[in-house]
Amino acid sequence: MKSIIFSLPGNEGMAKSIAHKLGVQIGSLRTRRFPDQESYLRFETPIEGQKVILVCALDRPDKKFLPLLFAAAAARDLGAAEIGLVAPYLAYMRQDRRFQPGEAVTSKHFASALGQWIDWLVTIDPHLHRLTSLSEIYAVRSAVAHAAPAISAWIRDSIKSPVLVGPDSESEQWVSVVAKNAGAPFLVLEKTRRGDRDVEVSVPDVEQWRNHTPVLVDDIISTARTMIETIRHLRAAGLEPPVCVGVHAVFADDAYIELEAAGAGRVVTTNSIAHESNEIDVAPLLAEGVQNVLD
Amino acid sequence: MKSIIFSLPGNEGMAKSIAHKLGVQIGSLRTRRFPDQESYLRFETPIEGQKVILVCALDRPDKKFLPLLFAAAAARDLGAAEIGLVAPYLAYMRQDRRFQPGEAVTSKHFASALGQWIDWLVTIDPHLHRLTSLSEIYAVRSAVAHAAPAISAWIRDSIKSPVLVGPDSESEQWVSVVAKNAGAPFLVLEKTRRGDRDVEVSVPDVEQWRNHTPVLVDDIISTARTMIETIRHLRAAGLEPPVCVGVHAVFADDAYIELEAAGAGRVVTTNSIAHESNEIDVAPLLAEGVQNVLD
Image 1 (spheres, chains in turn purple, yellow):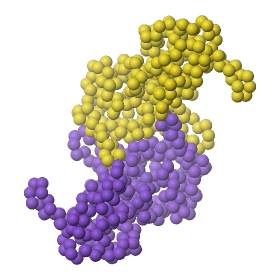
Image 2: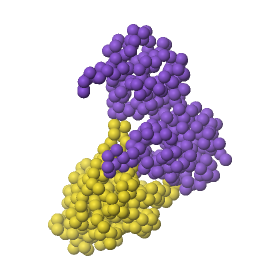
Image 3: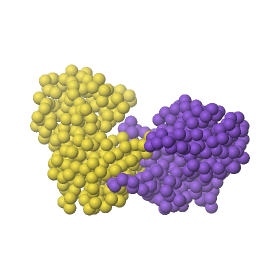
Image 4: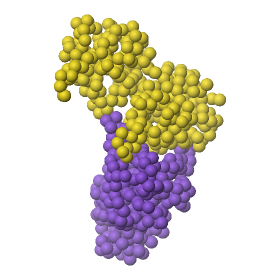
């Protein structure tokens, strides 16, 4: 059975890369908004009897949800044999339980609302807080790709004398893995509490890292508060301007500008969300995920 | 069983009016957006075992859909006995069939996506193009209120010597009904085709209407193109600046400013969508609709 890939607006580059990797056709999905802000969609390439693959990064999800749902529903209506979604960034992974009485558990509701229109889902590094697997909220089959090896490879190939930096002891576990795969050392900032509101943060063995380039890695860069705070500590300790690496370039409001202004030597992300900071291509990882669910 | 009303953002006034008319409690639904533009919702008033009524006008629907879906899903999750939606303006009523191959039939898909989260739906004057009833696309029970009597009453009470104006012969049927109920005369513009691109539009018996106030009525004022065109013909014929009345104040882009600039003497709408032009209160009609579905 033939597969065919379509991109929702803003995902053209990623869709093209995945199509190329998989050797499948890329189709044309026309979308526009009427003056009253309702959405119009049209599949300009026939899809009857085919496996339809939709590509849509779900950052800023509220305005993207209905067009995506319409694409999936129309594909079904038009006789697609199967409908899959590649969401390089998956939304609503934070509120996975009710912290206060009366709260909407949006992780669960979003998964339920989205899942019913598709047959499978492929994403990269979903923000699994308290969940251990996507299958706890998504009933459809899914494949999860991981950017860590691609990030390690990029650090190894692009940064001279890197030292991976973990902002706190909780981060040590994954920072050590990324560092190991990059063939680089790592350090973790130390917090010393001096009083209720007085916490001193210091760089251990600071002299050892003077001629290294600090590298900060996080899954989502949204407000960038943690990275900005960490940059301040590193700069105060007299280290070089750090390289900030993120999997998902969400960048809420002015976070990108603020991160550069705070003294980041360089800001680098994967192309899971299209952004000027994209330097690490995750299309091959997503294509592999698609291959797994299609097989 | 107790009923309780909640408003989605922007619908506070309408929710309050309907609650007052029905004599039911108004509850507090807190909503906000995280910096990454995901939505947060919390019912701050208990709803377990109660009939929950959500109020949400669905103009500019794409960004409103997920928060509304989350409210309905959370209400169900929190043990609401029943979930109803008052949508004074209902979205996606235009594309009710496939005009070109491959198009998404958004009327059908939107109704299916929305309908599954609610038990009933109340709206006012949905734009039923080719459909004869909401039940053709909505499986849930519904009540439809009509603004025409309220508009006729407003014209009768507010406009001295009104003459209702239909922009074309197709509009004659409903213009004549609004006119009759307002106790006012009506006229319909005449089109004379002089060539392929040359259509002359004239006001019949123009001398008769010199001392009347023309009143234009439409269901949705979106781009306002038809009204602006009609105003030009009336002004060219030397009539008074017309009063423009719309049920639904969608006003795409700068339509409101353009309508006033084109020479509308006054622009008046119902409060189905909150807008500065609202002068006709449809809350009693919607409350009556809710009463019908609750009984």
